[in-house]
Structure formats: structure tokens, C-alpha cells
Length: 93
Image 1 (spheres, rainbow, N blue to C red):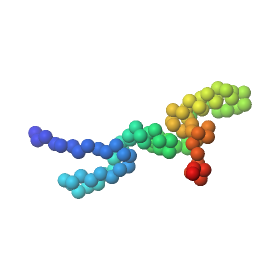
Image 2: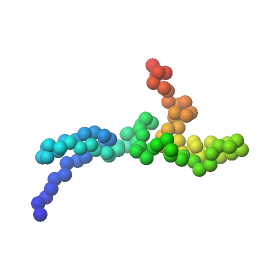
Image 3: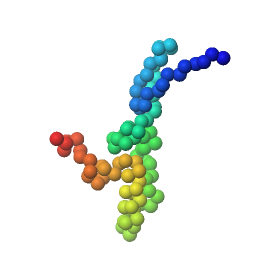
Image 4: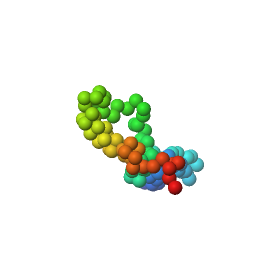
């Protein structure tokens, strides 16, 4: 058996890489730690119908709902959009 050399895959999501042997281009889907820590990064499993917490806010459960929502948004690195710690592009100077 001949040894096959596999070129390293870049860690930038969606970056196009070209294989010099086959002249084909493919898209890398590896996600680096830097892209995962970017609050603007959206994972392929994130979508509008995603249920973040099991019990909706009903008025009587605010503290429980707030804790669950805070933990969930923080785990997805999206809490900064809700608590105001990230500024909108129009507000940045």
C-alpha cells in the first residue's frame, strides 16, 4: 500500500481550499475556537425554531425563566446582545 499524504485542513469555517492534484476546490467546515467565541458566529444548529428553555415566561416564573435564559444565552455566547455589553454597529465609534 502506498502512503497517501493528506493536506491539513484550515480552521477557518467556509474557507475554500484547493487540492493541487485534482484541481478541485472544496469548502472546509472546521470551526476554530476563535470563530466559536465570536458573538456573531452562528452554528448550523442555531435556527429560529430552536427551543432554548422548556418553560415559557408566564409572569409567575420570572426568576426561574431569567436564570434559565441567562444560562442558555451565555452558553451560546449570545448574552451580550441582550444585556447591552455589545454595541450595535451604528453605535460604535
